[in-house]
Length: 388
Image (cartoon, rainbow, N blue to C red; front, side, top):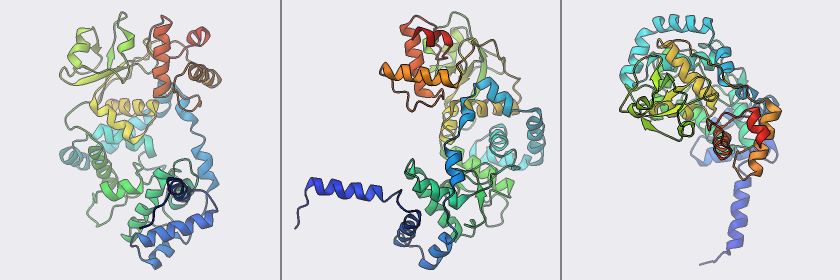
């Protein structure tokens, strides 16, 4: 029996980790092919699958330019929830009524939720992305920023190819590898895909039944709870303890009602835990976020996108246009980065200084607001920046 020193083990482990990304692109692809064969895939099939794989600089540019999520909720939601999308949503709800009924019956996901994703992701299938999916996935896996996310998707796409549901040369989609009308990654298609039209294949690009039922199955797999709400617009009293707002504090709906929170639409679900979220502070729109709201973050990590998608789903289900209120002016991109730098200097973990008001930046803002005696509603203002 041979004994290997801890140092040698660590060096070997580091070398194995490094081989997962970076280096020459052609060498990286050869490594993927060797791994695919080691996983049991046929060599001829593997060679055919990777034959057209190429690095895509446009994918990398898109990965580093996600500025849309720097917009505040009211601006972003007004931009993406157009009257045209509302009308198309109503038409598609009628056209695919049987599919939506099946989605709710079998997976517990209401039509409004699926319609909102369908609209926001691809404009009901009209804009599905023109990035070659295989090239995007291999490029992002090679990039070393998030190889653990994209590398498995390559092998999932290989399995789809073997089933006749993926064309490495022609399948296109979003820059991050999502495919079809509701933009699902290959691994999710492989595990959650549903043949909605009974043709023996899962084609999310051309079959609305396949796409909608696959999306519903995916949401259920992510924890969607049938028969429960996800988001509800409310009015809030002026004397609320603002520090208790935000996604980290949950109270039964009846407790929020006892504090003076009232619904603008429907009835508050008294027995369900809910967070009171204020996307633009205490003077802007206010929502109760129920457990199903958390599932949205499994689909997308942006608070602005998630809140917009969830609100859009309520609109498509009959809710009124939100009351924008009169929120205090927020910070521009340069000011937001300056704020993040100041918060980081005070020991807060805000992640990357990117100008995006993410969850960690919101949490830090709330703590500093409380420390400074300001309303702790997690909405950064110029007054807060000046105080810091």
